[in-house]
Amino acid sequence: MTEINFKPLNGILVLELPSIDEKTESGIIKSPEMVKEEEKKTDNFLVIKALADNVNAKLELPEGTIKVGDKVLVELQQANLLEVDGINYVSISYRALLGYRI
Image (cartoon, rainbow, N blue to C red; front, side, top):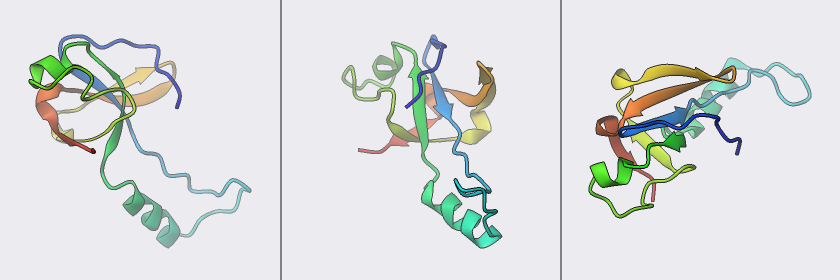
């Protein structure tokens, strides 16, 4: 898991967008069906790459319940695109967090 060079503040989470390569590691172009199948496997959960220190407190959860690396489901309508070190992420308020995988 790559680290992000960014520390969000005030209840903000930074999430990694799922990426589906259109080619295999050996360079073969995948069929549209194969790409769609891989998209289904992402299961709409996003991975937390960084979060403000107060996210768990704002959600009234014990400290450390939600942490970097967890998979979460969010309202993407409330997301903002964020670019850090040339990599695209989305940032959301803790209020847009719908749930997390346990």
